[in-house]
Length: 506
Image (cartoon, rainbow, N blue to C red; front, side):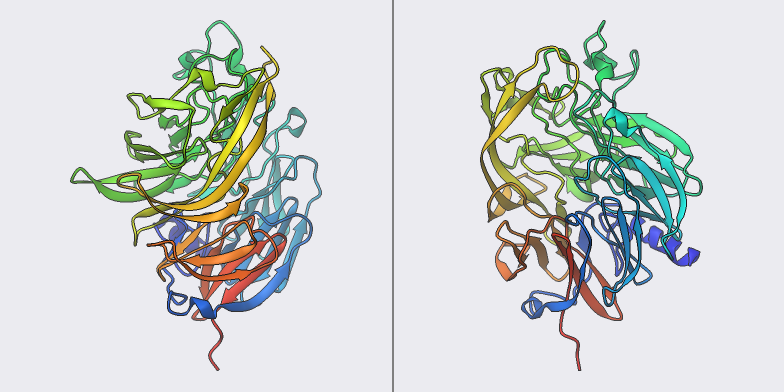
């Protein structure tokens, strides 16, 4: 079994998932693109339910992993192993904990061991065969305000795990843990120590840099050729009041490239310098290669919560492209690095200021997708306006303000990665809780709208090819796999898992 699962992890190094799904985004690239094509435009309207499984408790926000014909999925405090052919439960692990139970994104895997984070910031390793605990370590003290939701990322012999909690007076960090023992290998902090590079972007002679934020709470990506891992970080503190932290506040609201063996920072890019609107830059850094100016380059793209689409050279961090993907009113032009220049008048005020996007962001944790077949980046885009209020001057931690959402609509957008143009847009309905996205070699895009419909679209045009009412909103991102020559589409609707497939041939 060790050899089989090691092979699956090597598969994750490739830039496309094959018949399995061995890591959170399907593979290390973050594309959420599958080369499977048994389900395609010619037969997608024949999809039927193959099996259904109901999980206990809250909605499933995790993307299941598939290894050795077994699916592994999570909710806060829970891990399940299901037979991928039938949905039958093989085992269930429960660990009741304290902490914020707002969601859990999934597990990581190394050999025949699983890794998941708990709401009270423990990283736990389980035996994949039976769910028994191998080890349990505390990443951070939940009494300080830390909690955890992300799916760990396993790179070689490193389990990378971040934490949440960026509205309190605590610093963000990313850990690398030994998969055999849980022992700390390195820790990278998103706020530099005084005197280190980046500290000059915080006020000097004050303790503002010590007041936290910059949480790495969504799973990163990895380029095995460059041996670099890419992560987004969250907002600085206090969240809505930047008066006591003048400067760009590195490395909050940033995309960072780290050496997975040492934790050393190789480069950074900051989508939202001096963020005052809770626009975490944790959205998936998606990796792909393309030709720019006649030269083949390794690229990274992010649809960021601040409403801008960024393309970077992932070797150097050099800016390639910046374009808005919704209508924004908070910035005026770009600086020399391709970062938006914020308008001071759009920072929160005691009597409020109207800003787009709202605090929920132009997108959020819902997974984007990139299709090498179309060269397009697909994102759940939220057209949202909020009034931001600043209510506490000089307070070092917490929100130091509030916001009130006014208008919100969701659309699925297809962005040309060469130009940033929006090639097509599919309106999904009112609200800002759009679903994650999956693209496949069957010329299909799977997602869900805000009216509780699971949908298959043409990724080239946005045309609806198939839809079905599922009786609830899809909180997680769809995934796909193949077993015994049959392709399955897996979707989580609230706390119910639906497996879809073409009818079996008789």
